Length: 145
Image (cartoon, rainbow, N blue to C red; front, side, top):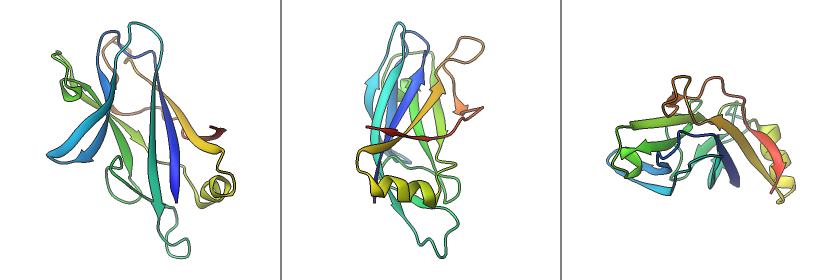
């Protein structure tokens, strides 16, 4: 099954490029590159679910945007130079796929007008671009497309 996701990067550091990492290792590209002087950035993507609900406690995720091992899957947002910008910032923001259960997958598969959405902080306490694993992570919620 394909899942539609919407990531809202809240108030990212002004003038810094952010983009979704598609692929992994040395074979990746950064897509949907954006920057703002104020306001939020929106990223839209699709991932697949796989796995066997009789064997797997939680769904497995796949597709070019998914990083990491089962039970630890995440999505990267590339920042600054990693997003193709000449910048003093060379970072990634890790957005966990945590909290997505088989029950949520069932809800989404029953209604194609639904998607998963999360909001994450774009700026760290010191004013620099937020990086590393999102903390605190408020999770994913089911919303209408």
